[in-house]
Structures are given as structure tokens and as C-alpha cells.
Length: 272
Image (cartoon, rainbow, N blue to C red; front, side, top):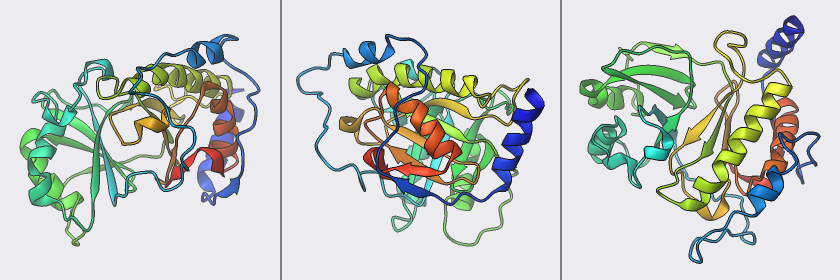
């Protein structure tokens, strides 16, 4: 069984992803529990933090040239409302130099993530994943300015930093509860559903048993909390697809249609 799963994943990764569009997300074949839809639907939001179900989703994603994902050393539940102001987090160092070193014509989105990668770093280093480059970097605080100049600058620099190619698909769910309770309440249900359904298909990342599997984690504020749940899918080639208004009953359909069949679901699509 494991051999057939490995072969299937190898075939998937050898085919360039060309996406088509479908209108609607199909009904789920499986859910982790029979009550998860009801539990998520019963989430109570403050009067000033309601979800929007009417505005068109398309083109509501942040416009950026690159997306920098900094692996946090604390849990998502401990992220302050403004993670870029947390002195213990490497993202704060990026924030200090962003205006000086980032070309406004080539905007860069910088986020914190909780994500298991299997890539080891020293105590002085943090792991940074850059899209669409689809590469990991080990970065120390003192190296942030040089990293930004070399990797986040459109000029043709010779990269002196050692990059680690990433070939795993990645699913990130906005779970920044202290920034906005809407994503904070919905994210645990979505994370659980993705892990359950990917595991059931033999596609969930495990450093020992399935190192080529799909990695699932949480991301800090990406904009659009009124469209929670917000889900970012990065395919094996580094292409990003942003979904909004994702509910637990949509997860199985996203895996089947978007991750396996390479179809973008219009009713959930915020952009790429």
C-alpha cells in the first residue's frame, strides 16, 4: 500500500500543474466526525466580527511578488495581534527593514507560520520558506538585511545563501486568533479536517513514513478575515491558490478537486 501511494505521489510531482476551473465545491465523501460541521456552524462571533457571505471573493487576496513564511518559535495561539512587533520573533527583524529594503513595485508579503518541515535549524536560526521560489533558508537575526537584499530584491543578485529546495505541497490556514477571532475560531476545525482527509488518502506529511506528503499548518494574518476560513494552498511547483469562506465540509472537495485533479473552485477562489 505504501509503495503504491509513493508511486502515485511521484507521478503527481512529475506532471506540471495546469489548473482548470469548476464552479462549485463537491460534497464531502468523508468527515472526521459526524458533528464537526454542526460544531463549526455554531461558532458565535462578536457583533462586529461577522462573516461576509455576499461580496465576490475573486481578487480579494493580497497583491504581492513574493510570500515569505517565517517559521515561528511559538504556537499560533501565542501570536500577538501584531506579530511583526514581537521582539522574540524573527518576523520583527523583517519588519524593521521592510520599508528600507523592499522595492514597493515588487511587494513582499511576510507571514509567521506554524508548520512541521523536517528541516533542522540551530537555536540561532529560523527557517524561512519563500514562494514562488519554493525554497527554504536558514536565517539568523544578523542575516536578515542581507537575506532581504539578496532574495527579496528583483535585481539579479548572486545568492550567497544556501537554499534548500522544497518539493512538498503545503496547506496553510489562517489561525491568527489574537488578530481576529473569526479565523481563530474556524482554523482548528479546518486544520483537523485537512489532516484527517489527507491522512485517509495517504497524502499527509510525516517525516518518517511519508516525507513527500502534504504539509499542513497555520499562518498569521493574510488579510480578509471577513472571508474566514482562509486557506492557502501551495502546490509542488510553488504556485499559490487562495481560498476563502472554506468550511469543514469543503475540505474533502478541495483535496480531491484542487490538490489531486488541479481544478480551481470558483465559489471559494480569492486569487493566486
